[in-house]
Length: 286
Ligand code: AMP
Image 1 (cartoon, helix red, strand yellow):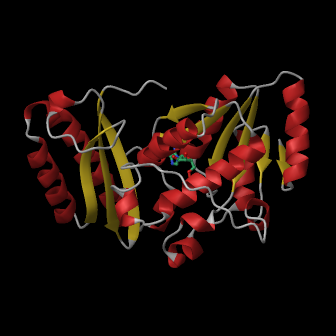
Image 2 (image 1 turned 180 degrees about the horizontal axis):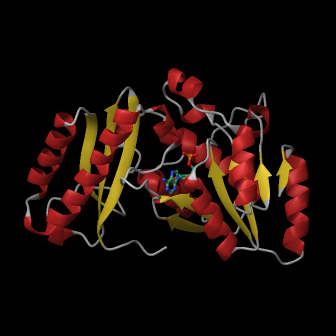
């Protein structure tokens, strides 16, 4: 495994590999890696000749400064995990590499409704930050395929839209959410939960499962109310529990009206914001 911090070195290295006919698979991350991230590397290794993982805690996507400060940074453990996962190349840029001083131009994307709802409504500016950092990383790495987790479903939808707007040829691959034995979606934030918090957190998965099992024969509004009630009773402070169309993220009011339905939620527990989602009807073609 090669570790590169310098953008020019990375570009030269990848240019040579590309000339030899190798395809490049890329998984951008913010580190504090777990099995969820490593599943993206696995998929990149399976589908591409060279797997590239970046670790960069992107300051522009944190609307809350404290959250950025508290974000776990575990570089040496991350490198060990990536080595074990047979990642070919790790890119560790610093802030000035991604945001060169003096260069302020941010690309503004019109995502329409996609970045206004759910995460977009509760984390103003978050998706503009995500889209910009992903664009900057893609411009440097120039991969053939981009691997992103279903765990951040709205983020995936927005990056799909960004690639469309850019008329990009990059293949975007949706990788399934990796969960703990209790169903809790793996997340770097989980390590801040207490033992009891970890147990309680699995109720998010149970609530999503309950919704999935009952969506065909229960009114959608009723299911959303029930889900919010269950989460509150378990000690969460839910921000939203929405049932939306998986392509345009518009609320679905009737099971029959959409071919692709996803339930998405964000809830606070022990001062930690947890997000999760579940596909309730038909998987998206990836
Ligand atoms: P992050 O480091 O949180 O920015 O995540 C980097 C990538 O890993 C994103 O594409 C996430 O959706 C993905 N990811 C994070 N957690 C999981 C998980 N539990 N299962 C699958 N993918 C995940």
